[in-house]
Image 1 (cartoon, one colour):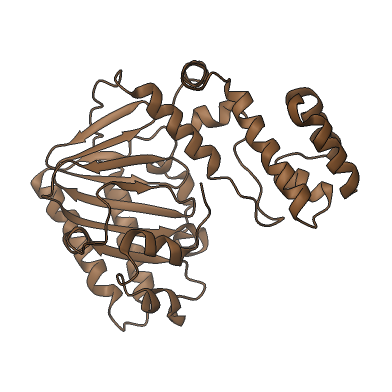
Image 2 (cartoon, one colour):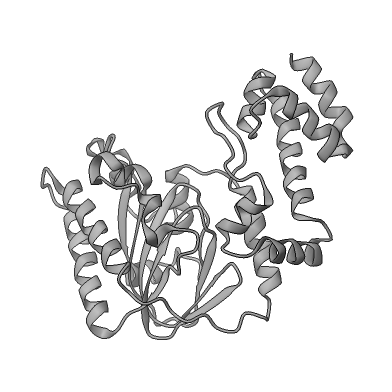
Length: 315
């Protein structure tokens, strides 16, 4: 998964002529506030710039989507169908896809960074909220009354974003929290039969989750998911099921895939950066250089000799 800037993110979903990029991204009033934006889906889908599949795969942005229209949502080994209307709360930690099943789509969605809802501004840690836990069912059915209630909030956010009110970002933050708290009281949607294509979907989401951690671009960037159990918990599936699926679909174990990707990144960092070995080891999740070296000698022998030579050169 390629790391992208916020500007590239918007160009990807809106096209080069949409979304008033300069206004939203260069406006100095956004400094130190984190990033927030809201979109009307009717304008979004009929702009001619949007792909039909709504794939949210960026590791920095949270998303809340108020959806009216038939959609298919896939995550982990679950598939849910939004037949009429619903709301979806997405965290960058959990990959998912939702695909419109027809052209009759409306609603709103907003995207924001963790900094926008930081603890200093809300008194809460967003990743500790129930709705953003790995085991959360983050797709919720809405009846007509609930949909209208959510729609009012989104319309207020849409209008407020263009206002010149000095405290508009505080107000927008409150609107987002209102959506989250309302969502946490909703009943999740039932998952459909997941036997068909579930294995390939889990495999795809696992790879996507793994790739989100790369490339490593600074010494401060440290991978958070390293062990198979970490991925299983994030995907909300049992570790044995994840191991079985990956073995069936790739012919390799979960550990082999993870270790192979870490090894590839290690080679890139050792060859292409000026970082010392301890900095590279730390970024790849190793507390000590000795653990870093032993990892390749024991866990990933195919590149052990090459990595050992590179480590010696970089010392």
